[in-house]
Image (cartoon, rainbow, N blue to C red; front, side, top):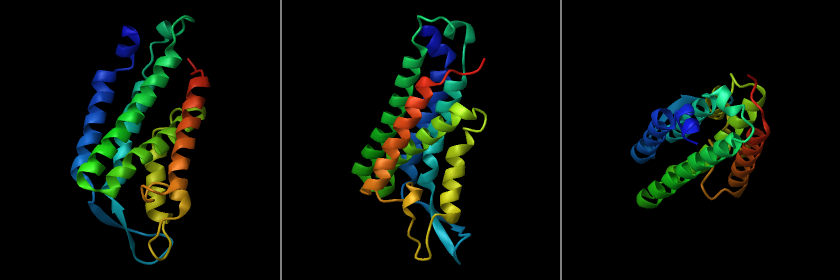
Length: 194
């Protein structure tokens, strides 16, 4: 397991990303900027908190892409299980940080951050199995799609957007769990190309 831990660069990549994520969630909940809407006149308020999951997803993908081919080729090493635990731990950390900051600050944005991280991680993992090089762009692409075309003329988010929905929105929560589970299963079954 030591070689896997070093090969995945958890201390040098993922841990700093998770710390930065926690700092952003704690420091920027409720902060919004205006972005133009492409579908309706005017602009939409863009919560900076929507970008926080990118810190987790990009760090996680970099770790999962850091491979030691010779060590992972040995059949008795449970690399897939280690990776699965890493993904679940990163998702659990994001949920815990969001809940802790949401509880202490009363911020709905913070409460939603864990759900959003799970959703974007799941999408990223699904794409990573078919297009490894493009997977890192999926979370950012989804966020900006939501910002530019995800709101109606009354500035309400469409149901498919997931990210700006309220923390108590059951369909958004369900979509996040389904995406995360599907991404986790797809990643566990996928054998990377050498």
